Length: 219
View 1 (cartoon, rainbow, N blue to C red):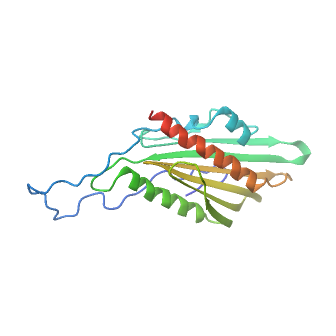
View 2 (view 1 turned 180 degrees about the horizontal axis):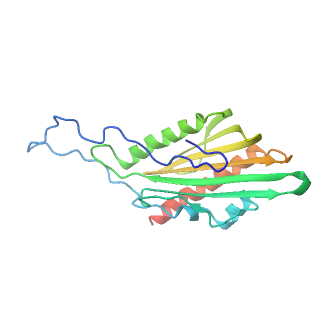
């Protein structure tokens, strides 16, 4: 489930066929199946995925620039962090912004598939989840160039608590890591609704940083 204004997106994946089919031959002379080794072995600290300059641009009045790290039982496989910002402009209302990033890493497993394949499957699922967000209107999806091996931006409008939000979700895959970014904003208490294209551009730039952070953690 993808997020709007403070809700956390799903970062887990369920794989079918994790165990070998019953009746599989294990007799001598039948070699075990092999898959290519996963490229990346660990993940970056998700709260350090973006530069301070990026955080300040995306969240002008950020409550905590260090971010709020999500709980993970395996930080080498998954991790998440979120930030929020409320810019009180007095009689002109308040500009709200929300940003989160989630990493998911897959190992290669002969019984399931290579890390890249498993990541590709999850990448496809994340895009479908974003496009299927309940209550979303004006949903659009387009490739995002120069971001990992593949990246897609999903944009939509959604209403929450009588406020109109502009939401951008960027899903990117680099080898066996999938990065999902949710960035949304709303004008509250009479403030203007933010420009969706402006939010999209900021999210796309942030996605490049998050992907690069994944590679750097494995350098």
